Length: 285
Image 1 (cartoon, helix red, strand yellow):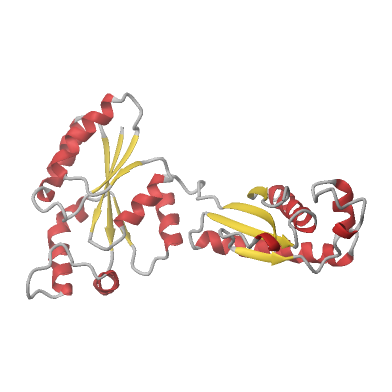
Image 2 (cartoon, rainbow, N blue to C red; image 1 turned 90 degrees about the vertical axis):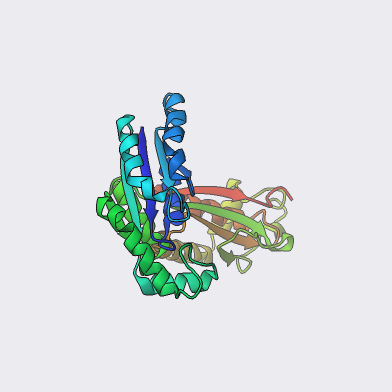
């Protein structure tokens, strides 16, 4: 069984690191008391493979037991657990700024002690653990996306990166803009099949409607520009750590034009290796 101990300076990003590792199939527990780690490991081993990858966050919040962390790690290794230490670090100005923004007290702060002094005190306390760490990640100046990429490279290999899932959703403006939409495009400028009697009862998923919509030059030009824009944006959304993107395309009722455009965009994304799903919210309204 693989045990990853996530520790480090308060405010350096341990909880965020745990969130990322959950997506790598780690079972994560925050603020695990050091004294309970061996017993917790026994319980995990008793499940006979149910918990193969476990990440435990521990730090100086565990005032009484944290000093025993290194000896406890050796105890875990004697139990045939593969143990690694991930130490989250950051520079003092970054940590002081983060604590000021969060308005929370530092766990080692005492009456009359400045925030900087509390951080320095914690640095001294954690120096032996930092020296023993398998991985040290300094989160100063890191975006969430950069932190994700760093952790993925350490614990999943460079070939596995967090995949961005794209939902292409059609909707009708008269039913309201989808609350989950990240990008909204209005296609009400396109000729409307609703006013063609034979097409009115059909939807944008039906071939006659799609052919009507795409027979117009402005439709084809719009789709080409939309595909280019999405291709431009996706790498930057990934870089910033976004894991899900909803592209909402709206027409008046959400049955004809928006459905046809959304289907075409979805097919284009899939053909280019993007993890995409197509949802037609108002097609039956």
